Image (cartoon, rainbow, N blue to C red):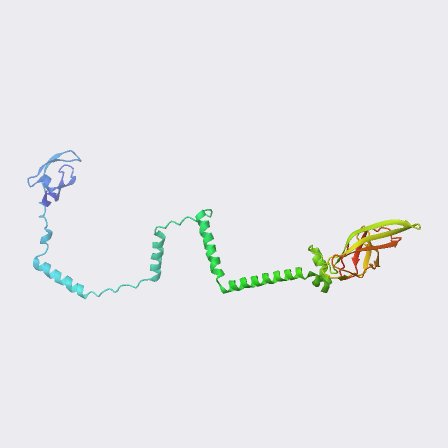
Length: 287
């Protein structure tokens, strides 16, 4: 259908005056019979005026007019100043960057390592070994190792010296005899010891007589003098109730020699439960 057929015209009902806008192509130049939708009366409708001819958009301007318009547009474009780009606002850029970061897809975080993983434990042990190896090669670590070795060697030397020369040490420092005895290494500074000690109680002239018999044995490798013997009576609580000194019959003993020793006391005090024999030297040997 042409553009003329699409143009509309107005017709009016002669009976009720109702106006209608209809396409020109439906009536044509001769008109046609129509019926009013308002009152129902038919009539022969014709167009009041033919529609204007269609406008061709390509014929709005002549070629000379179009060329003149083009030259005017170009002249106007040359007179418009260039627009300088506006400066970029750092805060605006930062905001855009934050927005991009917020809407960017988030990468999934890796799952935490399993502490019970055998591979992880093995890697940790290998890392610890490497760390220890690196630390052991540092000058300070070497100095510490040397200090520990020197301290250990000094301690061993002191222990060996204290064991080998314990008799000489206790002879010079008698107070150390108790220390040796407390660790199960009693020191016999006299080179003599008591064996087979016995206590006998009897009556003589109606009085109580206590007799102590023992043997003195030389355990030294050289001839040792025999000092006086201190006899001590001790009660059940460990307190001394009576003591005296007796002189053995021999002045010295050769290595391995044995000497009989005997002493007695009249009317010993009541409460004596034990007898202790010792030599009258600093920290004496006792039986």
